[in-house]
Length: 125
Image 1 (spheres, helix red, strand yellow):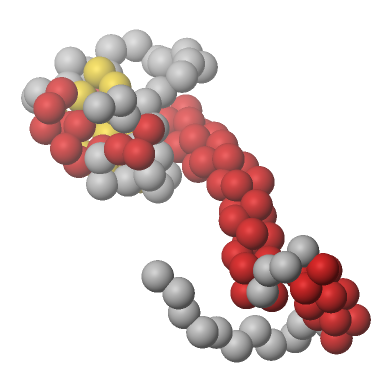
Image 2: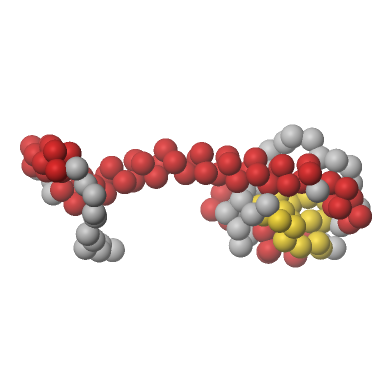
């Protein structure tokens, strides 16, 4: 799906250089912008995910004394908040799948640093 947009604040020199470079490659400026934005998102996305993981882990560490009262239950932490407490993993998984990054674990003893499941786009089907 394509959309016409207006972008304010673009440097005139950069615009002219980009338009010329796109023309030399036989593509439109819109196609060049799409390629540039796609590459930018690919570079930024992993950093955002890593930051979300770190923030959730920090929440778990700092809230452990509150979380331990749910010993034996499964909890979901996402967006630096406790999103739910569950008896069964499947219930917790349904809630966790609503978030891009969610930590789902059985409250037993303080978790060590480890790989924790990411959102539904990371699932193997």
